[in-house]
Image 1: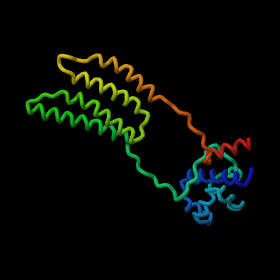
Image 2: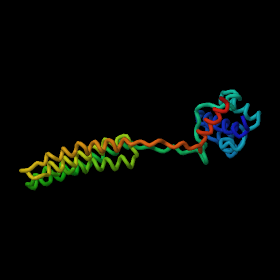
Image 3: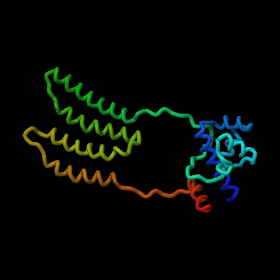
Image 4: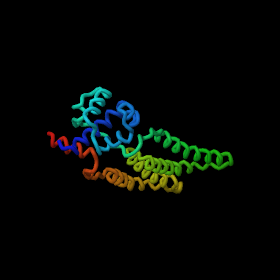
Length: 217
């Protein structure tokens, strides 16, 4: 194994062991009497510590020196700056549900208000259906919930045909619209299931790790 490859292997192992131990670069540096900048340098594979420090690390993490210098399957990307700050993640599914119910609440409020005024306009709900589904579709795109987007698009397209049918003249209900809805839904399904082959980019430690493992075979 070449020196550069050994540095990469050690850097990845150090990152994995340190993060699994819940230690920051500064905390590890304090145990080894080194600065956090030196730890960062090792984790960037710019250098590798001497045998004495490797021995200290093996005792801290409860592994052998050989384990520190041996390539493993689990790799993590090398941080380029300070330790990442844990961010709060909101429930995007609940936000989408609130928005969906909010649209229907507005529709129901308008319906009741008109009803109290002596006007019964049920067509509000026929319009609220595609509007609510379109709103959900936008929210899913914003929150990157791609697994639900095809289903929502299909429901939205169908709601447009349903709204056109319900909003037709009382004496004429264009049921023939649903004949168009069938191939339209099929087009939506096929369009949402077009997949592309991902390009293989050898620009990360993941790909470097694979090359190292192949050489060590």
